[in-house]
Amino acid sequence: MKTLKVGIMSATKFQQRVLDIAAGRYKPTSGEPKVWFSSLKSLAEVLNENNTRLLTLIEKMKPASLTELAKISGRQASNLSRTLKTFERYGIVELKKENKLLKPIVKATNFQIEYKSA
Figure 1 (tube, rainbow, N blue to C red):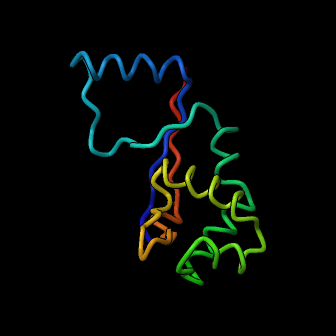
Figure 2: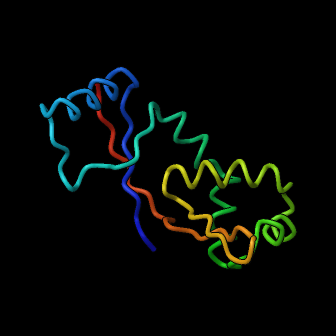
């Protein structure tokens, strides 16, 4: 399974990084994280125990839809949808449309964390 490299950087520093990239003053290297969080706390909210358990369940059971995932996980579909959209935004899960259904596909189960201090 793919390892997703994530970074932790303050919002202020990240904003300056984006401006520097846009202005051509900084060019990210290929080994840098593509996904950034503003704090360890925000990372922990996304990759909490319940959510990592959900990732493992999706990887093992390979549900064909969110409805099926709701049944096997015991979680409400609305809660799952919110969590999976967050995962998708960070590149952890892909929500693939198949026959008018959304099929969750795990893209990363391993995470490498890089912290950029102020």
